[in-house]
Image 1: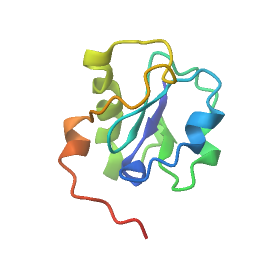
Image 2: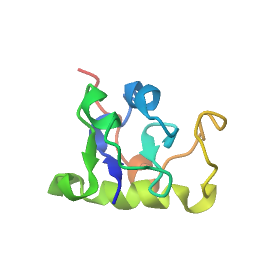
Image 3: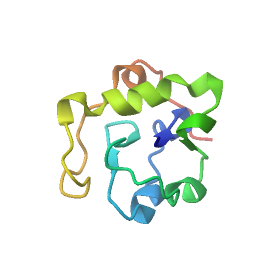
Length: 107
């Protein structure tokens, strides 16, 4: 099991979760952040600090954002397991699900 970052993060990328993550497993895409499913230790530190409530435990992800689990996993298909997001920085890519979204309002 792992945590999932869903649609509310798209075009926001607050990064409070990145600062809170003790294992540096939250990677930055162009429009969203992604949690590496194999590097996440399920500590839950990221969830309460997300200001847009975009982070969910895998089994608790709302049905409307169920596809974001797959997006978080598949984001790492090409990237592999770098062993830490900080050294990588922005990957300048996103999962096709995120790429296809229209710009998200920043109200």
